[in-house]
Length: 248
Image (cartoon, rainbow, N blue to C red; front, top):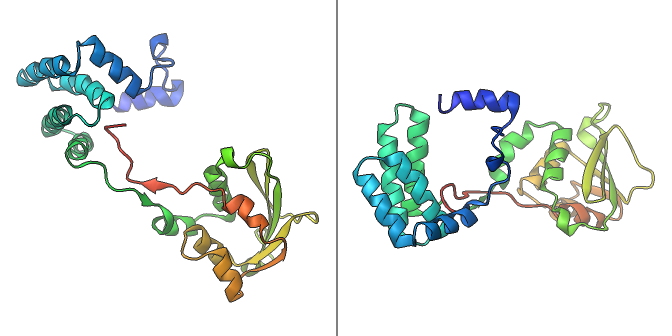
């Protein structure tokens, strides 16, 4: 009821429950600070929350102290009380997924979030399983649009290990802060044409090697302006894991 029914509702009717108060809510940090002020300050909020904790009203405590943690994630008392609360909710949960979620939140509050790690090589297996079109789509998602305003670059890709297949030729074009790939095309006016193996592209994307290293080794050859690659690959976000889940 508290999970699967919500999923069914959201699939068919989206996340919006029809209550306009939930349409454009404040960010958790902004709301948290206002709730703390409304409660009469951090000490008053935590004192009230402790009474509810002692009474076993853990769901209410989790909701209340969550505002305190987002208002001031450095407050040790707030973190400890919220960790104790989530731990109790975890112990009481029949569902293993709920229990894991609660206990993971308690662990983060006590030990901090896991250190950020670049996805890079960790995503190698998944990236190798992708089609070339999907690989180029991931690059489009990683494009830092705020850094490519005014840039326009077109690059032909010739995958030497896919000769005779629809994936041998691709065009990757950057314009209007958007990266678009097209299969089976060759643009005569492109800034550069890259001759490369699919596996080598995967190695570059997953940071096992670099374009410069592979060009030096002869695994990649470039006709035209090799520096044009920087307009695209020099402006890609490096995704990391280890983000916080119960604090800003």
